[in-house]
Amino acid sequence: MKLKQISVFLENRPGHLNQICGVLKEANINLVTLTLADTSEFGLLRLIVREWEKARAVLENAGYAVNVTEVIAIEVPNEPGGLHRILQVASKGRLTVEYMYAFTFGRNGNTQIVFRFSNMERAAEVLTSAGINVLSAVEFYEENSLGNCS
Amino acid sequence: MTTHIHPESMPDYLDLNALRKVQLERLRHTVSRCYENVALFRSRMEEAGITPADIGSLEDVHKLPFTEKSDLRDTYPYGLFAAPMAQVVRLHASSGTTGKPIVVGYTKADLDVWSSVMLRSFAATGITHGDVIQNAYGYGLFTGGLGAHYGAERLGATVVPISGGNTERQIMVMKDFGVTGVCCTPSYFVHIIEKIKAGAFGFEDLKVRVGIFGAEPWTCEMRNYIEQESGIRAFDIYGLSEIIGPGVGIECPEQAGLHIFEDHFLMEIVDPQTGEPLPDGEEGELVFTTLTKQAFPMIRYRTHDITSIIKEKCDCGRTIKRIKRIRSRSDDMMIIRGVNVFPSQIEAALLSLRETLPHYQIILTNKGGLDQIDVEVEVMQDLIGDRIREIEEMRKRISHAIENIIGLRVPVHLVEPGAIARSEGKAKRVVDRRNKQGGAQ
Image 1 (cartoon, rainbow over the protein chains, first blue to last red):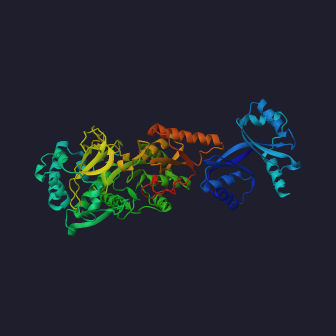
Image 2 (image 1 turned 180 degrees about the horizontal axis):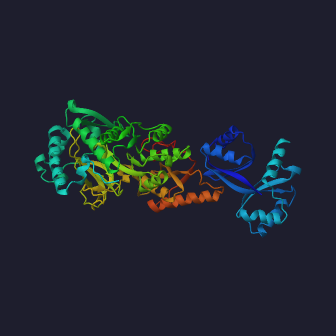
């Protein structure tokens, strides 16, 4: 149910993100999706890749501070109220969203949203019992490799 | 292990009356030697209206004029030598951050004293013949390398004269040669720890059990870090080339202050402002008079190191007195918004949290005529989370820890692992950007 997400600590300086992409390219790792959170002082790059163990190893070897956390990917109909419904379920289940990011590569033009909830243990349970389509790792990567190729 | 006292270490345990007698005899001899042979010492004594005959007790040392570092520069290169060059067999020089270096000379007898106090230093940490000592202090004009080299050899240990640098080779040698003791700066050893942890084997695969660390001020928190991370015992060694080099003082296994080899070095603590002598136990500036040096004797040399003499006798049995470990040099002091700040305080604050590495740098800038500092700290590879808030909170904790110690809130910046340059010798803790207005941030 849960996906592994890699976070990389980044100082704010020019060319830095590019260096990380270079490390991943050398290791032949494809990015499924990513988001960059930034403050005036530093940034936090969050990545989802299929080979997360390899990605962690190459980034750590390159000297980066890397963290692996679990997130949940949900397929959301690409229509008004799609996200609203999910957040209602989350809110009823007393789940707080720590952060989220969305992308639209999925099949049937559905949007996928990656969520980091405060209580990840309970989150999957609350969502699935409300009939929300929480993607398994396999589903997620397969859909997105198709989505990328087409 | 039984406690075996090396014959050369016997003066560590001298009866205090006998020690003071030896000191007085040697002091009188040194003062005469300086008066007869060194123009500057003679003229200073004449100005003060004293002659060697006025030194009748150890307390009379207070009558003598101080010698400052600037005196050493002003008389560059040989102006303070008290032996003819025909008797000088070795020269060393300090790096000297401003202009000309300071040159020091040694006769054969001086080298003999130096290796003897270094032998006593190694012996105090439990090193003996049969130990394999990796000497990673720089060999050359710097006194660290050769000082440690001859002392360890004289003790009968096996010396690996690897000098500084090339960390991978250091680690290979450490393992393959069965090294049991390492000499280097504490900051360089932290770098070695980091490399070993990232490599194929750990400290459990090494025989290293002792580290002799010096040549830069370091904190107790840094010692705890080194000992916990590597499992070795870390000893502080003290010395300065103006006095002899390393081997002026050493920690014993009690690790509660540094024993000064008082039979060769007469110490005083003085008020750094007034120069008035202070009683044992009170903190002030450490001042040395050499008692046996021939080529480069020193009279009341002001070290700018801040410490105090420990009154109590040490549990190790040595009678020679101890000083508290030197956490700061008055030269390193920064005045930020009217508050005295030392780099060692920042180090202590950072290491107290156990969530950052001892890799930090203090950036000193000047805005509108006022000095200010920013602290850059590396994050630890495995302590970074996925939430901005967590990282911000860590930064705040670091900032509060610093504020608790220095009493000021200073900007703290988190930087990536490895962002701060590693030193193979003395660590550069303060980056002074005050004179480069364009480059300052």
